[in-house]
Length: 80
Image (cartoon, rainbow, N blue to C red; front, side):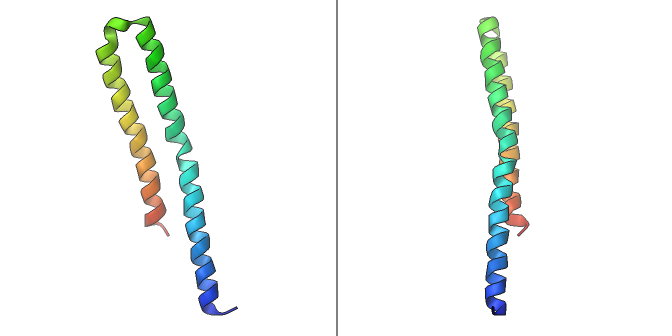
């Protein structure tokens, strides 16, 4: 096995590890978004008059959770 083949296989492993790492990192924000919208739906059902405040808080929570997912995908490219 030549040095070039060894280097190519090491790069392939690093890319695979990054993809697996991002997949695992996406679990947290996915669960967070589910909790946010599930509880928001329950809150809207209990107090429909507070819809504006509840919706605003849902959007902010969604944005924070998705920011974590975006940071996770960027880290896969930064640390190769």
